[in-house]
Amino acid sequence: MRRNLYDTDHEAFREVVQAFIKREVEPNAERWEAERNVDRAAWLAAGKQSIIGHLIPERFGGLGTEDYRFRAVVTEELAKVGAASVSSGFGLQDDIAIPYIVDLGTEEQLQRWLPPMASGEAIGAIAMTEPGAGSDLQGIRTTAVKDSEDWIVNGAKTFITNGINADLVIVVARTNPDAGSRGISLLVVERDMPGFSRGRKLDKLGLHGQDTAELFFNDVRVPAANLLGREGAGFVHLMERLPRERLSIAVMAAASARAAIGWTVDYTTQRTAFGQPIAAFQNTAFELASVVTETDVLEAYVDKAILSLNAGELTAVDAAKAKLWATEVQKRVLDRCLQLFGGYGYMNEYPIARAYADARVQTIYGGTSEIMKTIIARDLTGLRA
Ligand SMILES: Cc1cc2nc3c(=O)[nH]c(=O)nc-3n(C[C@H](O)[C@H](O)[C@H](O)COP(=O)(O)OP(=O)(O)OC[C@H]3O[C@@H](n4cnc5c(N)ncnc54)[C@H](O)[C@@H]3O)c2cc1C
Image (cartoon, rainbow, N blue to C red; front, side):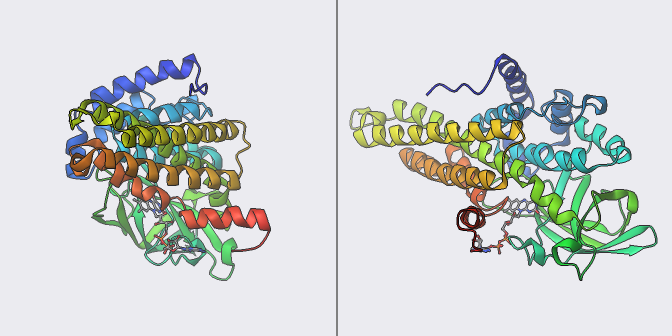
């Protein structure tokens, strides 16, 4: 089905992204996967080419656009070359860290943090999850206690995307132990603050190029000037920004499914068995027909959500539906595509194998599928699941 999401500006930008990927990503992707890290040089190149920093106002060096379609172009092109690790790192920067700062930052914070984030010099992360609290964010134990004008932060976070490389970490901490969800605030911890340390690069099933890590805060003195948003409003700030984060994951899912179908059509039309291309077997043909139809339908849904975000109308419930549906379809499509590769589908040198492993986290991070269902069901019935 022909997609009509993009106009000529997006397609022109796509060529810039493709050139960036050819020059910076493709020659290095294997090494990044082995080293479990994306070079900082790639971030700097991405900054230079405006591959990242879209939302940052031009006066701070960004593209200054709220049109999410430019972000979707980056995600699609990275998916085509199987660079999910790069995509998740850039996505964290552009869809989470930067929007928090753009939306909530004081003028002084914008001036301090946005220019290096636009140029790729400063990599952002968000640290919500703790060893003992993920879905149940209100169970976090990291604390920030006032000491004259500063905050003293103590605690541990885990599974943090960009965790090793991050220069700015938006830390979700409890600033008032007696105020429940109204006792949570956001504090920006910077790279060299004494008491801030990083654990090991976590050994994951997929996303091997992603420097996902544990972070530790031991009496980290954070100046009042690094409080992001209002004291005690951290939970509300998080909730307000979830639609964009979840849409970003949904877009990644649709792009990954589309890319997988491309690889699978190429493979099944070339590989022969019993004297014919395997795509000529009715089962293969029907599988391809099913996955492409599911992906067309998914794209239409995700495209609608993108336009809805652009219009400022994407609700938390709609974003939860998009994330739930997109990531579950992605999982299904990748599994069925991999099957059509036979044994080669299980070999890491084939992009389908890595994409399959990379995809597995999509129904888990950014809120699990189960949590998406509780949000959707509560909206439907008015009852807490
Ligand atoms: C690769 C990767 C990158 C990540 N990046 C980040 C990051 O950058 N920043 C960050 O803060 N976090 C990050 N996370 C953490 C991620 O968001 C959490 O893992 C996720 O929210 C689930 O939390 P949990 O792991 O504690 O699982 P739990 O909350 O312990 O859930 C375990 C199981 O119980 C289910 N469950 C929990 N509550 C309910 C309920 N009410 N009803 C039904 N079922 C329920 C869950 O759905 C799940 O199946 C990342 C995780 C991974 C794996």
